[in-house]
Length: 163
Ligand code: HEM
Image 1 (cartoon, rainbow, N blue to C red):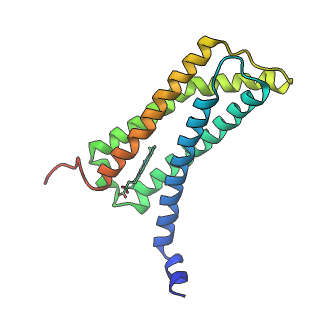
Image 2: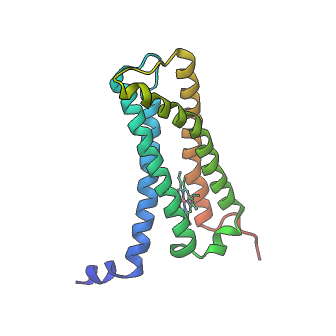
């Protein structure tokens, strides 16, 4: 009964948004690891399709990460000022959008693959494209792994101006 009472309060909403934030982060990271493991020259049909589907899931999870993050800033966190006055928060946001910007090249590449895949053909992936994509995904993984460090410091007020 007490559990039910707790779940109908703002605490449950706040916990739900925090959960979406962590889950979407985990999904983004997992999708990138999967893409990194799959990418190679001369992918077969199934591997290329898996890359495309994985990237779509990555995009959806990245969007959920952003939306849940914004909700936490506005409604479910420690107040918008607590974050916006902290440079670590802006580093975190900047890193997120930098990784997002880097994702454009792989994403556009996979979108182009959809054309041959829909005809039942295999997209052409030569060694130099595979190397380029591997490197971009490596950098994205490092970026994604660094963001939680900024987040944990930011959540504890590290970086806030001393008043
Ligand atoms: C622009 C996008 C983002 C915004 C606006 C945002 C915002 C927030 C906010 C407001 C919190 C709550 C901090 C608190 O408890 O006071 C938070 C926590 C957290 N965020 Fe984000 N976030 C974003 C992206 C990310 C990304 C991309 C990651 C991971 C790669 C991430 C990982 C975390 C983690 C691990 C926490 C928990 C920190 C802790 O409680 O110790 N966030 N985020």
